[in-house]
Image (cartoon, protein in one colour):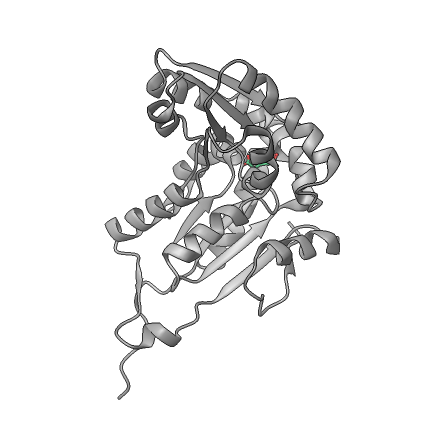
Amino acid sequence: MLPPIAIGDICPIGVFDSGIGGLSVLREIHQLLPHESLIYVGDSAHAPYGDRSASHVRKRSRLIAEFLLDQGVKAIVIACNTATAEAAELLRGTLDVPIIGLEPAIKPAARLSKSGIIGVLATQRTISSSRLLGLTERYAKGKKVLAQACPGLVEQVEACEFQSEETEQLLRHYIQPLLDQGADALILGCTHYPFLLPAIRKITGSEIDILETGKPVAEQLQRILKQNQLEKIIPGTAATFYHPDLRFFNSSHDKKYHNAMKKLWHDPLENEIQILDL
Ligand code: DGL
């Protein structure tokens, strides 16, 4: 009899965001855990979350998490700062699988900053969340944290306007005052913003530290899978030719979001993006 190709827990991992920004987290997960099957949901029909009410974000997060559970996922990654701030506790309290959230990188930024002045770019909802306040109090005592809400940036990313004049103007408007006040560490507190990194670097130059959360979240997911014995293991030589199952959903019928997802996910998508009517 042939040995099994995969052992351990072969169920997929669910990952979701308000739209396409969570792909910046998904790519890190796929890189670190290349054998794990992944299901990604972008909620573009109901984005941006950052300008909506907390109850809207909680309701959408719950519906998407329930859909992912119906698909048999073994863990859920909330690849969205806004949804983590508003819904992570709710999901942890009601669902039976590990829920991995993400949060602005205040702790490493506080360690890296020499001026003691840290800039945070995030959505309005994340900026006004008690979670950000709690992180600041816990990890950035004695530092100055300049929290900047960035309305409009998520829409620019969803429209694939990564380097347009309008995007650069918005970025300069949000970032320049932080630099003028002496910030030498800049946190990208929204998963859409890493796609704007080249445009952001044009404004900041190469001197300041820019922190995002995709990689640390992938590492945290790996730790949690190990702790719970949920890893998928591909033994021996099978690993070189094994392809995991990757499935992509979007709640919008508008093809422009589907095309944006394809553009940002550089590997060819074997399956078309499926519409998720929730
Ligand atoms: N990408 C999301 C985040 O990390 C939310 C963007 C939005 O929909 O406002 O906060």
